[in-house]
Every structure is written in structure tokens, then in C-alpha cells.
Image 1 (cartoon, rainbow, N blue to C red):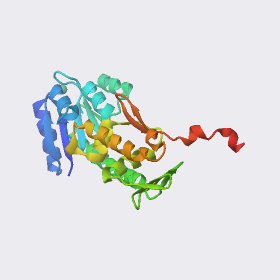
Image 2: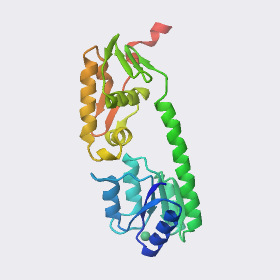
Image 3: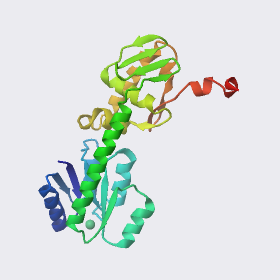
Image 4: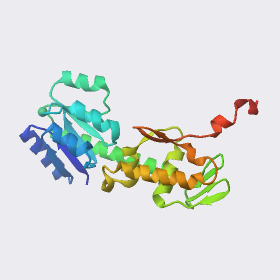
Length: 247
Ligand code: CA
């Protein structure tokens, strides 16, 4: 069973879509207004559904804007509904990253098939990334060693005691050196629904993590803040070990 949000202002169509999805065992919430959808999906009290069915033409805020905003900070699959093929061109042209598209009149059978396919795909991807990111290989960058099995962190031969969340945060960042993670993404990923809107939680954990790592060498500097964006982990070795050494 998945939690699905249907954003559609045509009452009868919204009802039919919701009914079809409910018949297939999903929990469905219908939103008929663009602004309400934006608030529910990106605001401070935002919800995290498994999938969003999003109409393009909506009152107050259109589907393109909503799609763009969600994509900027969240990783929820979106199925776009479009009334005309010209609209479809627009959606595809903008490469908004909707996961699928359906043109109206919507075939309910087709919609159900697409929704099932996407949910299955997402589940598979989740499993994959779970195995990758909670993998068993220790990370060793310079003087830092992170062992995901024993959940030990060693900096310059000294063990550092981290809380579970601090460990998860460090492990995620250090597994992807150079990649920028937004605070929203980290919050979604490591804390989930309960902490929606509490981006400060991430900042607090980063600060504590830096303090703990900082006691032994320059490891703390490796977690870089990108103001207004988020955090990334930077490898020091790439700068401190010049190419000439290996030549
Ligand atoms: Ca509409």
C-alpha cells in the first residue's frame, strides 16, 4: 500500500482516480487547488507521500511550478496529467523530471498500470541504494576511517564516539565526496517525516559532528557548508598529494 496524493481540480476526474487507486489498496488524498498542494508538499508542515499524480492546469499555482518546486528539494515520484499534446510538449521540453505523463482523457486502467510500475521501480531503487549506502566497505580517506559494520569512526588513530544520527550523517556525506546534499534532502533521508521543516536539526548535528571530529586534526574542515544550499564532504588528499609524487 502506498500513500498517494492526487492534485486535480476536476472534481469528477479526481474522484474516479482516487477510487481506482483506493480499489488497488492505496491510501489516497485529493487536493484540488495548486496553492494548497504546494503548501502541503513543500511547506513547513509538508507531507511525504510515496507518489504524486499532478494535473498541469490548476487554480492559483500551476502543475509545472509545483513540479519544479518539488523536484528542487524532494525525491517523490510524480505522474503528470496533461489536457493537450501541446502541454505535453511543454512538460517534456522543460525536462522537469516528472517520472511519467498521461494525456487526458485519462484511461484509469493505464493510470493504475503506470502507478504500479513506478512504485515497483522506486522500491527497487530504494533497495539498491540501501545496499550501496549501508554497504559493508569501510571508508578510508586520509586519516579518517569509517567502518559501517562496527559503526566505528577513527580519526588519526583515535576513536571518535558518535551518536547513531551523527554516524549516519557522516557516512552518507563521506560516501559521496564532492556531492552537495541539501538540508531538506538530508532531513528527509535520515530523519524522515517526523522532522519535516526542522532543517535546523541538520545544522545542529553537523555542528556537533564537526566539534567531535575537530578534536583530532583537520577532519572537521572536510564537511563544507554551502550557504543556502546544504553540505558536502570534501576529500583533502586530492589537494594535499600532488600528482608529481606518483610520477
Ligand atoms: Ca485542471
